[in-house]
Image (cartoon, rainbow, N blue to C red; front, top):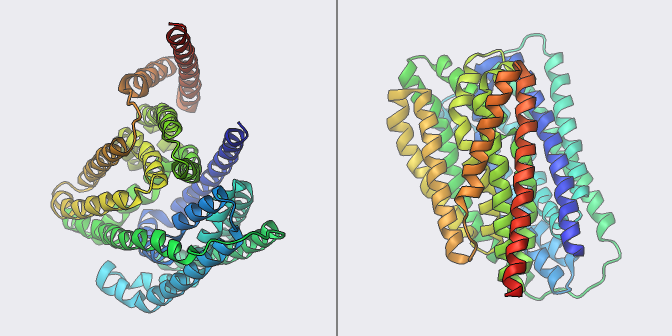
Length: 496
């Protein structure tokens, strides 16, 4: 019971922090989009896609390896300090290599991969942060595994605030804003924030670990490599393909429209405006997913498969109720939501197009977390690699013919394929029961009814708020009745 209470407590903390950070980040994203325009957001998205490859190389699987190894050490009553030390050394090595790769490889990425020299200097600035990012991943795994996520969360909030305030100050100091100088201001604030975040996290860790004096496992280094390297190898391929994929999209859009700036602006609307809005509510799901990895890892180590199946069923059902509701609200109120945040009218149009796939996007994060806890992370990586390769093929065929609509179609195809492969794998390694009617059909009917009633009674954002409240009430009543029925069936079965 104590562990369950701790899980719920940590889930509430992570959810609150995640939603706050996403809300602040999204608000800044709106500010930046209105400040530098769709074309500037498109350029920034390209810079970050290359930087994210550097982050993947810097991490090299240490975020997952750290969480799992420390969770196992806790389960066996062994030293956490030694485990963290091994993970930090691993992270420092790959973080330093990533710094050199991105810094000296910036001209290669700019000229040959992206085809835009304006990203060269921003990439060099960002590369400085990579060792700090890598070690922060290792330390973050420690706080997740020990259940003290609030400490890591406070540091992350500080990082986000430093990043945003730094960017606002730097953008305000610019006498004239163009896409490149705006991006330099954004990446400079990002680098400063990452360095400060690492420093604070390290200090918090040193205070947290003091006084521990337990024996360490003899095979820690081997386990770090065993957990980290297979994930790293798959992640390199996946991240390289994803980066290549994102650099191809503006080029394919240029073939459709005939103008590079128009293509970059279209990419900026979808990737820089709509996708952050789509992913805004996912903070609720992501916080639970983060906690599922150490929880499932410990239960798997203890061979408690029945409890694992129970957790999968409960988590997936709640995730789908939330995600189907979010998808429905975004679809039925795309004009109201898009118009509230962005001046660009195309944002609302693309929001409505992409909204239905939200349910799959959110639930996939939970399935992926469970697979990692069950030591199936390599399979998840394989699926991502296959899907990235498929997406690259589709980008070169669909987007030049259909433009942004082709890009949206690719999002649907890749998300649906990924969901099918991941859930199929999860069913092979566990015995949980899928309930499609109660998990998807009922929430879909609920959000439709709530949206229809809200639109008929109110207008603007009042109708959105009304629909959210109504849907929440309907699902709360439905879940309450479902739980009551399950208890009655159990009692009847037990008495019989």
